[in-house]
Each structure stands twice: as C-alpha cells, then as structure tokens.
Length: 239
Image 1 (tube, rainbow, N blue to C red):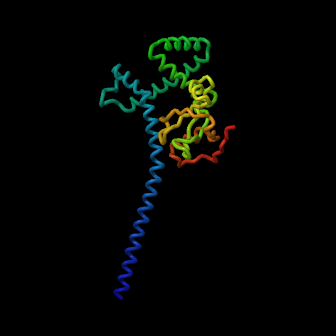
Image 2: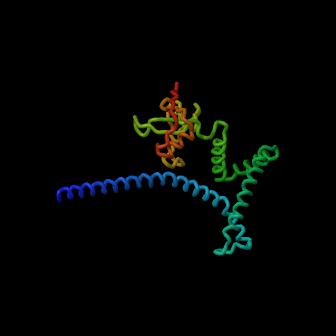
Image 3: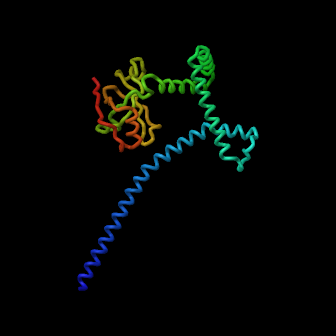
C-alpha cells in the first residue's frame, strides 16, 4: 500500500513538472509572438513621431520667441503646441506643393536654375548641394529609384552569397573599368537589419547573378534577417 502511494506521488510530481514546463514553454512562445507583433508597431510609431517632431519643432521655438499666449515654459498647453505643430506641418506641405508647381512653370524653372547656379558657385555648399541633387535625381528617376535591380554575388568568400542592389552600370569611360580592363558594376550591399548603412562594391559584371525579386522584397528579406522570404526567386542568368 505504501509502495503504491510512493509511486503515485512520483507520478504526480512528474505530471506537475511536465505541466509546469509546458506552461513555461507556452508562455515563452506567446511572449515572443507578442513582441514580434508589438515591437515593429512601436518602432514605426516612434519613427513617425520623431519625423513629425523634427519637422515642426521650429514652430514652437518661433511661437515662444514671439511670446504667444499659452506658451509659458512648464505651463505650456500641450494641445496648443500640437495645434501649432500641425499648422506648421500643413504650411510645409503647402510650400512644397507650391514649389513643385513652380518647378513645372517656365518662370519657376528659371528661378530654380538661377538658385542652383548661385549654390554651385559657393565653396563647400556646392559639393553638398550637388551630391544631394544627384541622389535626389536618382531617387525620382523614371527607372524606379537609385536601386535598379537586386543582385546576388559571392561575398565575403567563395560559396557564400550576399544580396545587393545595382546602383549603376558603369560605362567604358569609367576609370575603374579602364584600370581593370573589364566592365564592372556598382553594387550597394546593405547591412542587416539596418539597411541604411552598407558598402559600395565594384564587382565585375560576370560575377553577378541578377534576380527578378523586387527591391521591396529584398529590403523585407534584409530587414527581417532572412525570416520574411519573398515568392519564388527566379534567377536571370547573364548572357
């Protein structure tokens, strides 16, 4: 009788331990699932708020400098501040729309051309402006942006492959092409999970495998560290 009670107690302890392990495992799974759902949402919300604050903080400073009623340091009205921010954001959007419309008119194009010539003759400013303008022209180009195509290539060692974006198919007059004696392409290889940084690589064209996956699909693959796979990847071999 005592022996049966002893074995029953052991079985009960084993059952409790297994149940506890199952509950812990289940809770960990639910916790990770919740994190993967909530974290991207809060990151997107934080980035949107940061951009909104960066674009509109000048309006609060201006209103405070003008001694606007309701803006008295710690006693400032939160809703008044947000109203000023929203008005400044609307003002920025309207200004951009007006500039865009002027850029399509003859007079506006002449004014922009004169402004560009002035900026290009200023030391230091000319380098910054020309670089930003080239990037802007590439982003809004009819070819779909500065990233023309997704490319697969061996990196950092043979047998190991990395994803990159074709940014330019350098012509024969390019100095690197002349020195190497073979056509090379410019590839931007982003880091993961932060694709805003990366490396510029000059790779011989024959070493590249051109993929049919879209730039957005490749970006999702990089940001998700390979967990979000696109549809079937079709390889377009270079002839």
